[in-house]
Amino acid sequence: MSSESARHAPPLTAPSLPDLPPARDDRLGRLHTRNLTTEDVSAVLQLRDQVLTQLPHPDLYVREPDEEQFVRTHIGTGDSLTRGETIGVFEGNQLVAYAMLGLPAPDDPDNLGRCFTSKITDPARTAHLTSCMVLPAYRGQRLQRMLLVARMALARAHERDFCVAMVSPRNHVSRHNLMREGLRIGWVGEIDGLRRQLLALSMSRRWSFNHQTLRLVHGLDWKRQRQLTQDGWWGINAYQRRPQGNTLVFARLARGT
Ligand SMILES: CC(C)(COP(=O)(O)OP(=O)(O)OC[C@H]1O[C@@H](n2cnc3c(N)ncnc32)[C@H](O)[C@@H]1OP(=O)(O)O)[C@@H](O)C(=O)NCCC(=O)NCCS
Figure 1: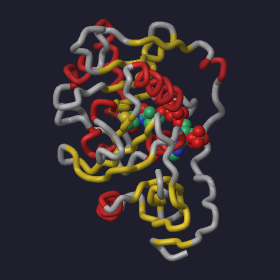
Figure 2: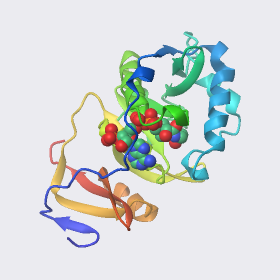
Figure 3: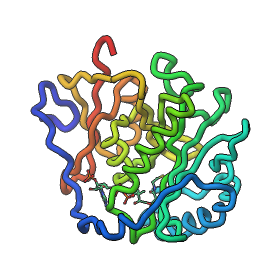
């Protein structure tokens, strides 16, 4: 297989990922979830601060210019100004993880649906899988995956059937989890000066990809990924090759999709 393109490629093997400690079922059983309210804002801010000060690379997640306003925007207040909801995971009274769903207005310049063609989505039907953080002691137990599924259900309840998530090309864990739940990389570029990938999933249309012609790209080769997505390619898989690092597989939508 050439370094970048593969015609009639053999089936791709499953991504190889680092071993994780076995899930501590006893602890999982004690966790409970609920939608957060404005009373939980300070707990979310504290959790974010704790996670953000311990990131292994600063680009994995960049602090918002106004952290409190960002959190408040994603708390469901039930009125017409609601622009999001946040699900919290608790052990007892301690918030141990959260995940936000963004519900941007169709004409909001920050609506990520605008990065896709009208054939792919309508900004009015777009929801953002905005932010998810899990305290280090609770990682590796599929909490992010569970929270992705929960937010997709919430998006449907808000009549948004197109979900978009933004990740740093360096955030292999998050991208892996998003792809495991069916999201695909459909846009790569700069947002607010940061190099980012947008992963998307339509819950109303099944996308099929042409697996006969593939492009393999280094996970951090942002410019090549940007070019491919501009040319209509989608990142459909990711795997780790040592020592080269993370490799992404791009394909085109199949005819008729
Ligand atoms: C990214 C984050 C939310 C993941 O939370 P989590 O609940 O531990 O993730 P999950 O347990 O659902 O992930 C499990 C999957 O990730 C994989 N994974 C876990 N750690 C990994 C690592 N270091 N490298 C690659 N994959 C890894 C596991 O193999 C598993 O995949 P599988 O189901 O295919 O076996 C958490 O690490 C975090 O809060 N990070 C800091 C903030 C951040 O980056 N948030 C995401 C951007 S919004």
